Image (cartoon, rainbow, N blue to C red; front, top):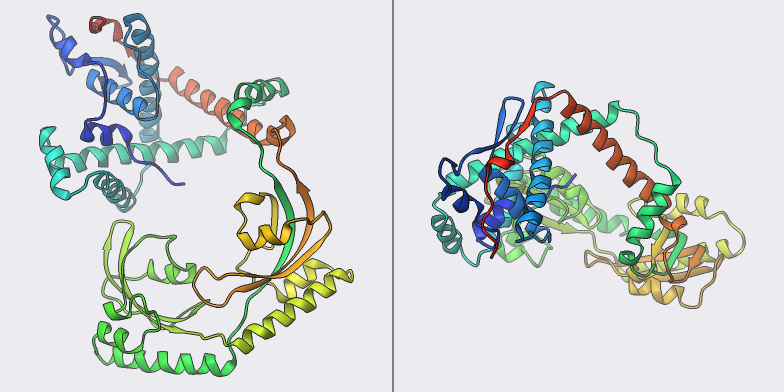
Length: 447
């Protein structure tokens, strides 16, 4: 599960909050401490300043903090209640012995710090913002590290609780109520398509594969003999974008490169050179230079498997045969198994037509359910030869308004999860000592 940046910390640093200065107002009252305890949960204190931070985070998510005292008091009560929930979950997670690895925490902290830094034009500007807030890089990292650990531990604990509790039932009336409340915000429902497809990938000849592998083995032998990786990349690599840089790929995160390449790279140790790694575009030799949290600094040498015009033409002819077979009544699942690229999706269900590549949209223009479309060429995302597509349409739905049937199951799951979470937290709160002291803290005068 992907987790976002702690927005309160980001805004605290950037100084973009417009929250009423509650701490200052409290400090002006005799006997009230800025760092006063606003609630006690178990043996954990929640500070007044922590509540302010939660409110800044709410603002970052678009919540309007009221200025009128009575409305602000109600808002604070809700914010404190949410803060109490967070602490209740965390202290119960600790009691349950939930832990997370330092590595997982460190990787996420690195990612979040990098995301915050990208909000500043220069490193100097980032450091100046820290200085203006009276903190250092090390202190800021400690804050983010603590919040990240709390978040990961709490998430793991809640996942465990969800797996052990009977889901709370959801009524049709509840689903309908949520649908009516959110109906206007849903916007128009896009036109969708249901189809199955045979995507046929051109393959290089055996001679081309043998030639690429021989070159790769030769380069690998030289690397193992101690020659410089960057020099080998400049001499051998078929990756024109990185060859002159000695194969330098820069800092890489998962999801940016070919899956087979990343699967190998993210298992390597710094300084390690791989053997031959095969992907859909050829053979690679990879060197991992450095690790920085969730990022990897790497080089590679690519030995591309060249697909000739003859190979592409043979693939087109095969696609014509597949289309003819389908129109003659052949079973598409059998054709997918026999000729389809296993790395590609063979079925699309209720897929928005406006999110399809242009070639698909052109092929579907004027088509009807049960039609066979194609073959048509789908351009390669990696710059190589494209794939040929033959598709069988099972359903087309025009754009229109959302109906309850469209979203019933999605809403049911959403409501059930929310109600189950409320039950889990309610049970935890009932078994935990909780004392709130919000009434002891004065609000600022209306402005």
